[in-house]
Image (cartoon, rainbow, N blue to C red; front, top):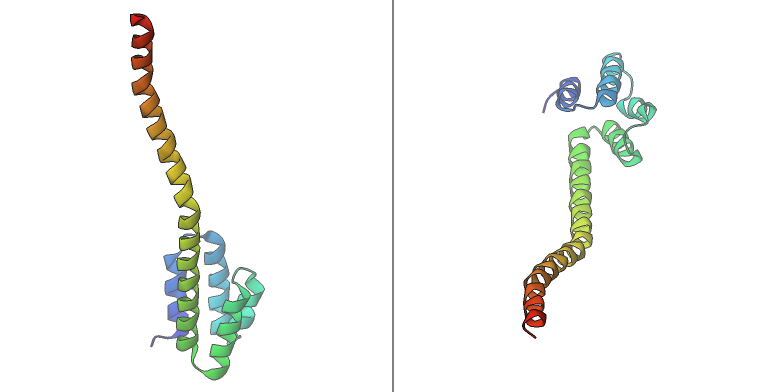
Length: 121
């Protein structure tokens, strides 16, 4: 519900990545001149092809807000799937790490008992 230039300026101020900030400044200037956003984003070589395609479709159909929302939902699901994969890989490593710690504690408790039994004999 806001002008695209205002939204782009806001998104530019949110990031700390200097390459994105510099690229977005150029895109904002060119959008003010009337150039296509998808064409400008394609020239940045920073955004994934799907984002550029969805922005292009949004420009052509006049439903930029819906396309950006669908793109954000897609990447949100991708992020959730990536986090789940990472946790699935991390879980066995944590179990192994805990096993090593428990084994170390058991050995450190049993070693003095074995030393005491050899000293008594």
